[in-house]
Picture 1 (cartoon, each protein chain N blue to C red):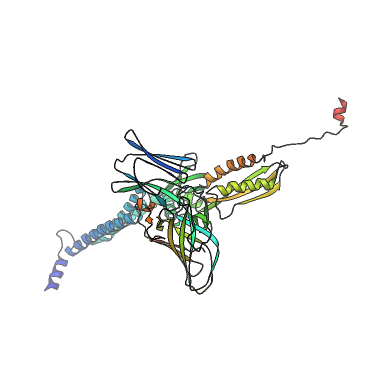
Picture 2: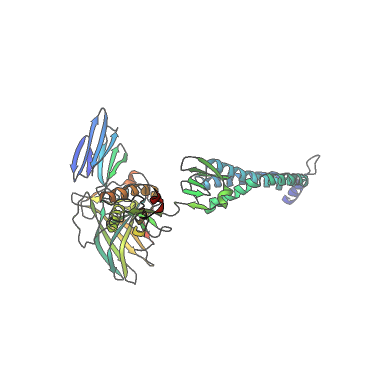
Length: 279
Length: 234
């Protein structure tokens, strides 16, 4: 009885078309399922990536995913109501090729953005160097990355450029080392100078205890003895430490009577120089 | 000096001076320590001030929540438990308590701070650094400068262990104080592969000590991880 009823309903034709009620039902079902699936996946995606990428990019990504699901659903459902997709697909194919050529860069940047997002060579707030651009990462978007240079300039770099460039991340490691070259006069006591420099470093909280700072006489320069100072500091504050310590070292060594030498030349004239004797 | 105060008030001890005075309907909090003066205006009529030692990982700025205490190498036999005492640097927190809220308004220290790297630059972490002697009994300390850390070292392994440092997470620190001592009680469990786990116990070193109001409590951060895993050696 039930089978007969189902068979009857499935064979009913809607007047004037070759579409049965059953096919219409499947069409509507697929569309509804696509809508529902789109909504569910969008919500899940929004929840998962919330806070990880900027709001505008997040919404753009969600829309792309949502409409892709709807499009796939529509293409799957249309044949059930006897809509021939071959013409649409042919036209769509041509349009796709045109858009593909036109949007090649767009697509490359998009894919690069996704790879950067997964690989995470840089994060928002990191001090980085990309090519010849040095600065702080302000934002990582789907198509581009915004870097604020140290002199406050807004710089937008396409993600493809970021992806294919050498990236230097100055804060990826928790600590980094910096170096000074301190030159003192030959007549000054190098041991005393090194001891004073070590004292200054020890008194600075962010000049790390370990790895130990290194202070040593590196070479006998043209104008004085060159002392090399190598110090580790937390990456997050290294620039402040580097800036503060050099001034403190200069003042401390000068307070001990050790001076930074001026460039000097001793010029000797031969006693019987013909140039002078002519005069 | 540690305790709860209704303002206006003025206290001076151990080279530290704190006073809260009324100025045209506002209260001026002023702290003087080591030649440094810190001012803060307070607008809370029925508030009070809490002064107590806090987790020693905040100065000169919060770059880490970890404290490393380095001590002379201690060789520990297998299957053994040893209790000893270390010292840690004290940081003093000043909180404003008004209504149901408590907010940190100042943190300072008479100690000089030093930071270090635990592990390597790529895989390690920055730690606030302190060197300490090993004491078998509770040492006498200046309660504004040094606290006493009671450390129970548990070597449940089958090998002799060489221990020369402990790393603690500030989020789990439990500080207690009285008129003579500031303390924390911790355990360090030596695991395999040069790994150890440090945990703070929420108990006073001496019966009757007062519990400190902690900075992470005032910041309403829920702490789920109460121990620190020293995976980069001890």
